[in-house]
Length: 93
Image (cartoon, rainbow, N blue to C red; front, side, top):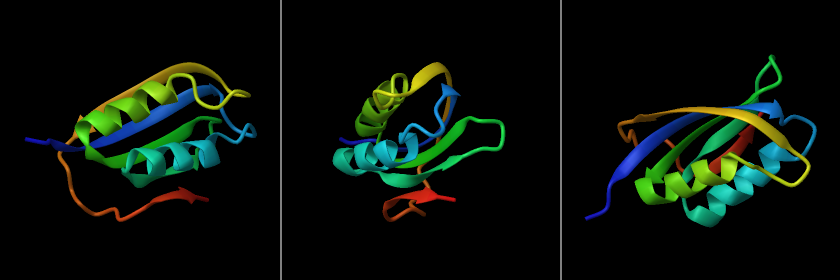
């Protein structure tokens, strides 16, 4: 039995201006999850993703390091019930 879930993540560190959003979108698509990623005014990056919990865990693991030019300092996340409201993985502006 597969478990669907929703994941909310905020990534802190040197994560803007280093291709973090595009790399996160690609990673989410590769893992088959839906969601979005956006920069926040405080310099962090926010991610909302839905899909198989195991795939979301892989995305979360990847977010702890991000793309090569990033320097992740902290990752804060919460798990939520699956809503089914997202159909693709996109970058929000």
